[in-house]
Image 1: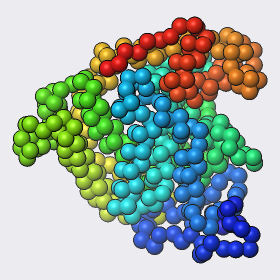
Image 2 (image 1 turned 180 degrees about the horizontal axis):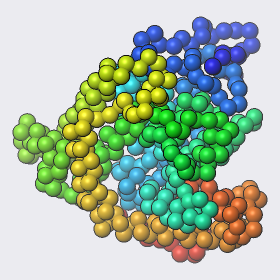
Image 3 (image 1 turned 180 degrees about the vertical axis):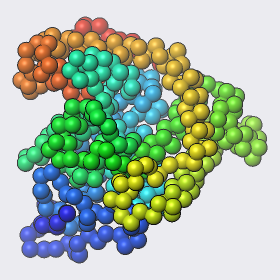
Image 4 (image 1 turned 30 degrees about the horizontal axis):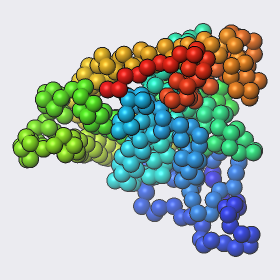
Length: 411
């Protein structure tokens, strides 16, 4: 349980800002209540003015890992233009969605927002291409998984506090960070298994509704903004999209209402608004239906259901999967995207090989943590170092080590 033990650092001794932070009175019984949090691994006094989940959110926003998302790939690498989404702007859009949905469902908005902001912290430079390359390079030492690395970041690699490594987030935030896509079954990655032995996260159960909502907000956000970015980049045309599942119907509705002469930006805005509204309304209706049928009495009952309670309807889920298939073929596997991603994979693979063979190429504090060249300890340190890089820093490090610059063509 969280206890309020002290005033904030910025509060003069002997003076109170006002009453203690009060929990919302209108939360659903199955919401995560901050007053019932399982607390933090390292006990701390809590704030008089913020809930423990608000503090988690603030710690994430001020973390190094979160700032670096500004220059990490969503689909297009940083060099391809400053209009397209990055991991940071994507995370902000997911957080807005999660908070709005949590409010309608009477969940803890702050926890939902926190999990949305944190969900991509563990991503490598160059998005999924970078992750694939780093996973392949580290196969002999356990590979790489961005969810596991996110846990390492917030429990070990962030060095902001004198008394502990990491951000010392609440149990509910750590649980949601690791399990937002559902229960984890054995074997789990080493970082997650190691932490779970120290502080069990109940890996075999479903997470809170706040975490489930954050995961679905990710789906809603990325299919919509990837359509936006794909159209603007010319990877597919409006005419192609009109035949796509869900998006085709949304685009036809826009044309019926506004005609076919809207400029591209206005067309995209109207179409995304229609599509996003359909997804949100379906998710809320299906989730409310499932909650009414299950009748969970508290957050623990949500975890004990044995299945998700926040879901799209079966028809909408099938249509959304079909839309993702369209985007996979027309965008994520477009030759222009694949050419860039293949080069990005080479950068990651070559960085890992170079640093592993000669740890002295690393910054002194990282090199000090290494073992012998090529051994598992060194590989683990190099894996963490590369995973934390932004796109631009990875390219700069590659140029420094190889003496060659990798050219990325603009879309």
